[in-house]
Amino acid sequence: MTYQKLIQLPEFKRGLHQITSLINNELSVIKEIPESGLMNIFLLHTSAALTITENFDIDVPLDLNTFLDKAIPDSVSMYRHSDEGPDDMPAHIKSALLGTSLTIPYSHRKLVLGTWQGVFLCEFRNIPSRRKITLTFIG
Image 1 (cartoon, rainbow, N blue to C red):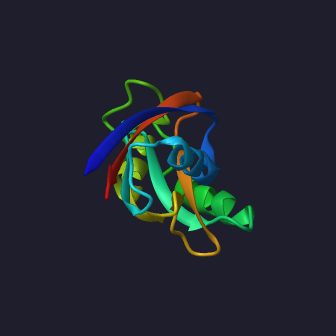
Image 2 (spheres, rainbow, N blue to C red):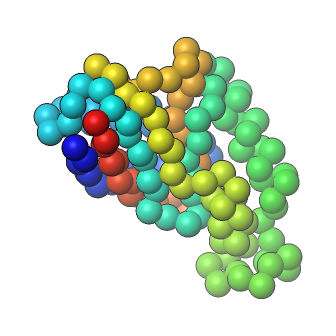
Image 3 (spheres, rainbow, N blue to C red):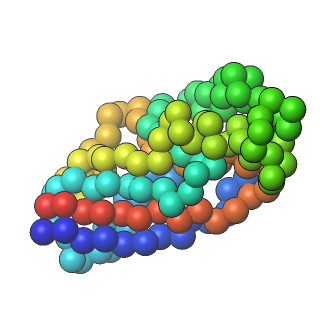
């Protein structure tokens, strides 16, 4: 059995933002899915990403974002593609490296994550936008 749901996320500024509770809330209200299974989270954008990282110490996502910004700096002179500004191509690179999809088991209508793990949306653009994700349940 499979089931899909499209979700529009709230507007997030540049940085890493935990969305674990948002996804667990969706799991708790969708009646068409089994109690346990696999869920794929797919981000429908090429200038943001999804990742799982530590959710306890807020410095971890901040440090990860700092690393990515230093490793892949905003620049119009470094890249051919700069139609939407200096943060456009670096956002695409970061998205390609981190990825736009996660597959996570769920049980009793909650994500099965380690004690310190959380699901994060990585927003790489300077102008905040409302990203969309598709949740696909397999159970």
